[in-house]
Image (cartoon, rainbow, N blue to C red; front, top):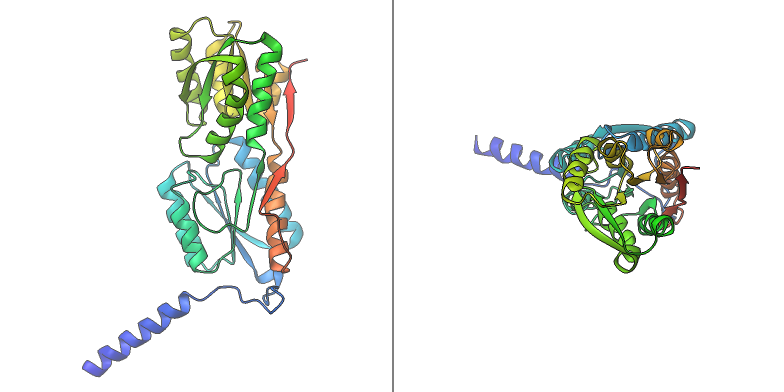
Length: 304
């Protein structure tokens, strides 16, 4: 009986050891030995309840289909704990690469490090991670975008204008970077009377804006760190002469700009971001060097 137990333990240890091996062997040139059509990319998206991230998913799907690569998606629903579980599940399914759009830049670090331990290359989208090795980070220049929003308000209303800021999810790199860029301009040229988190959410944007306007009825503009919050702010503002500037350039925001409601949005190209993440994986498969940080161009869309 004792010998049987020892044999079982030995077998379990062997199987455990096998599961820790790299799922993707490479030759001396760094190129994958696995056929491209047999490779699977695991994708973890922060939320599919936001049109911006749906566009990223569409870009990934379109490029993966074009390249003939399989993709498995997981929607974290803006829940950092769920995203950690999703990534763990994808790793257990033996995906060869990971594309991750973090919900929280700090909270996701442990999952990235687990992928590193499993020798699964990771590409991150839109938001950086605090710790862990990432092959490439693909995003817009969030700092520059924040600066663009600040400069637009200064140009429209002049220096020392009273403004409010709707911040995104605390801990997200996009929140920090867009805020940093905005304050690079605002701290010297504007009077930011209030800044509060609305968690990148439209309903939160509406509610927080209502509270801000009650406390500061004389504000002239609001910078929202994404379009969902901006559209909520537009609804709260109604007919009041307060200009709202968003960030993302999603379809609803562009329509709102065209309808003379949202004043402007710093437009990203989420479909291109998604496509570029798959192209980056292809380069990794082929053993090519990839950019550590790949910035996608921005443009300002505003009322005419």
